[in-house]
Amino acid sequence: MKKIAIIGGGAAGFFTAANLGKELGAQTVIFEQAASPLQKVKISGGGRCNVTHACFDPKELVEFYPRGKKELRSVFHQFQPGDTMEWFESRKVPLKIEDDNRIFPVSNSSISIIECLMNEVEKNKVNVNYNEVVQKILRKENHYEIHTKNSIYEFETVVFAPGSSVKSMEIIKNLGHTIIRPVPSLFTFNIKDKRLDGLMGISFDWVEVSIPCIKLNSDGPLLITHWGLSGPGVLKLSAWGALELNRLNYDFEIEVNFIHQRFDDCIDFMNELKLSHSKNSIYKYNPFSFPKRFWHRILETLNIAEDQTYSHLSKKQMHQIAEELTRGIYKVKGKSTFKEEFVTAGGVDLKEVDFKTMESKILPNFYLAGEILNIDAITGGFNFQACWSEAHIISERLKSKA
Image (cartoon, rainbow, N blue to C red):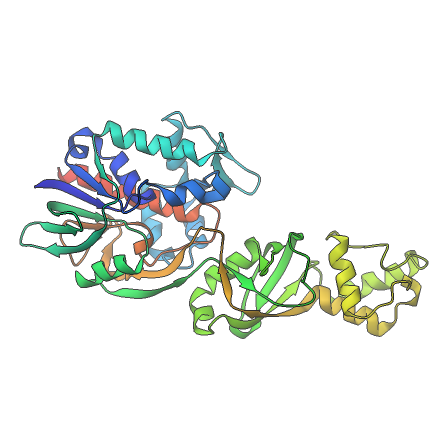
């Protein structure tokens, strides 16, 4: 009987194994259902791997987590983004902090992170079983039975970090844990609206977005996509509103302020334009920082003539333009997963985990980390940081018990 089974070859599973050392590593097996590990690490950040975020105060860091804020404070006091940076850089993977505080490898390639983790796991002599799906886990008197399609294994300790699949939830539920039903957390808003048709790729540096029916608001960059609206501003809303939006069956209205101005300020600005650009064509002179194509679309939607000048703008037209730009209403019907970086809200009830050690309060010698827990964050490297921190705590705990 070997000592440790790690279920899941993702960020949490590999980081646990990478920190076990050779003595424990040689008694450890990772079970990964895919043919290769660290799939989410590979695609994160468009293939560059958004390793973590440059927020080094645990009190501030937990504010980026819609679920898990309270529990993660003690976790980040033990291992935070500065520790993550030091860990990778001490293993010859230099990292960089970008202008938005996201942290990436200097190589701009997730392969740097993957190779580092795999090298550390190999150094620790951890055995990795690829293409081996765990079908069930049985608790015995002093050990656990791991049942796969290929065989039955016995281990003293289990580290459960398989992600948020339905099968994983079923396994842990059968062992006695309570599951908060998972729902998508990071997603874009599907919108069919003539104001957006054909404008895919247009972006806005900073907008304000709100969902009036649940009194939720956000701000940040916005992107028009083939399906509707995306970008950090929308993704933050989707994370914080994950449970409520699921209850609404993703059928709701959003209000968008494209110009970061109040309605009355926009009216004042339009009146100034009537004087300062009186002879200019409204279509030829776009007074805002967003692309001209969107400006034209707004004017077309309001049936403003192509040859109209600013001096001929009526009070009604100015009010209509200000309304569209500062509090435009868009109907959302459905969602789309944000690229391939699928994140869920839901999972193991956090009351059933000791966050000082990441050990189950229900199962002895059983540890949980990653998306199987009811913890999630907005984009920016925060979800990975939770994995690194939880995994590091587990590895330290296991070494102290060895």
